[in-house]
Image (cartoon, rainbow, N blue to C red; front, top):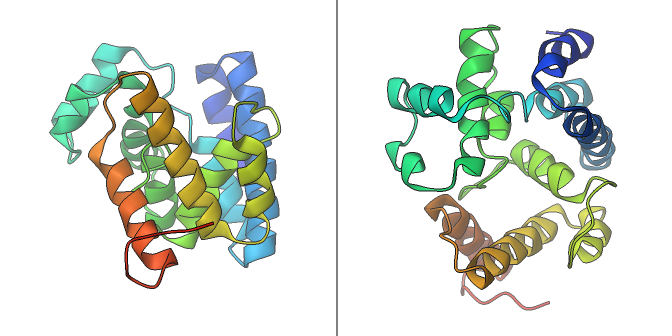
Amino acid sequence: MKTDEAIDIVRPHLKQNRFEHTLRVAETAVDLAENFGEPVEKIKLAAILHDYAKYFPLEKMAQIIKDNDLPQDLLSYHHELWHGPVASVIIEKDHGITDADIKNAVRFHTTGRAGMSKFETILFIADYIEPGRSFPGVEDVRRKAHTDLYSALWMALRNTIQFLVGKDSTVYPDTFYAYNDLTIRLNGGNGIHGQ
């Protein structure tokens, strides 16, 4: 699938501000892919598709989770987490996208997971740091993203966990697993990551 075709597919499903966000994520992902040697057109396609299911009705998303090979525990967590896994199913079933890199990047862009590939990490970070984002800690992650992708991911996950815990919200297990995995990997296996 070409990126123009993907834009035509997702645009009717997104509010204008979310569509503009999608284009900024794609631009940011392309910059990171060029910097870190990942396939540019493929990451751009994943970025365009990442929020495809964002505004699907909750009942439709819940049914797609129930009817497909997705973790059923998603239904016990905030519905904001659902659109990535749901989109990963829809892009294959409705549009024939079977590329594992694209599907996984779309699927895990909200939660992360242990052992994220560089490709998945680029989409996660691009979504987090695109120029329209403004929240505490994002500038630090932006600066780090251009020199150390996995440290930037670690910072983004840490910030997300701290934000959710600060709101007395649940944190999806994959997010903890991603954070713990990176903490161990970035500090040579001892589980303590210093900055």
